[in-house]
Amino acid sequence: MPVKPDPGGYPQRKISEVRSVTAAQMRDVQRVAQEEFGLDILQITENGGRVAALLAFAMLGGRGRGQRVVILCGGGNKGASGLAAARHLANWGVHVDPVVGGVEEEASFTARRQLHILRQSGIIAPADMESSEITVEENLAAADLVIDALVGYGLEGPPTGIAGAVADLAIEARRPVLAIDLPTGVNATTGEVNRPAIQAVTTLMLDLPKRGAFEPSARAHVGELFLADLGIPLSVHDRLGLGVGSLFNEGPIVRLRR
Image 1 (cartoon, rainbow, N blue to C red):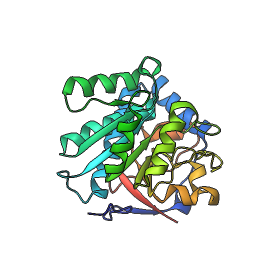
Image 2 (image 1 turned 135 degrees about the vertical axis):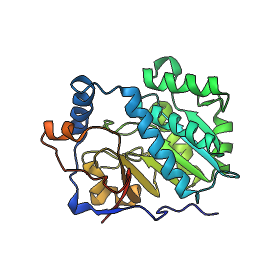
Image 3 (image 1 turned 90 degrees about the horizontal axis):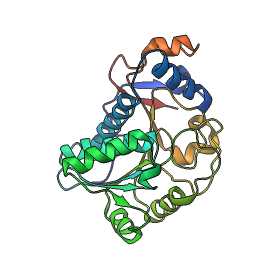
């Protein structure tokens, strides 16, 4: 069954009705949520992984058996959300192949924790990009859907090193991609495309829309746009002058219409 970039059934909002933020503003949101409100970064990344898994499952037609998803995970918090998404999808019957685009010892605490959970669960053994390039290529070629969780919204300039190599493989595979927050290579603030840049059929932004996703330069790379609730209190946004009211009165995932 072909992947559905817009699986339908989600409440909709016009882009003109929502407030977008820069990468710096989103960093402030996370800082205040953690330091002043006491949210744990593990909670935040876990929430991101679950909503990404929910949208991915819908894109697969709402069935797990016989479906194969490759999750490209960096070593930061976005990668941690990708690893969490892998666990949820595996629980729902999807065959998952996570690819860790980095050295585990250099990964964030959140990514290492999610890797530990995956190993302890016995669901999967994530591939190490440095030693398994052939396996990664084979998995990508067989994927029904690829989830891009390689780099965070704070990246400036092109993806380099292992992340850049993984992005190149994903581009060559030409499989449908669901990007978490923004596709690898797209600047969250300006929308500038820095190659290698992954072209997604669907992008799921987390908490607040990233300004760069709405720029004409990014349009061909972000595809259909969705926004998901991370569980960050609305008062965090208000505290920073970013209050937009509740965007999720009808559910935790909304479709953004141009």
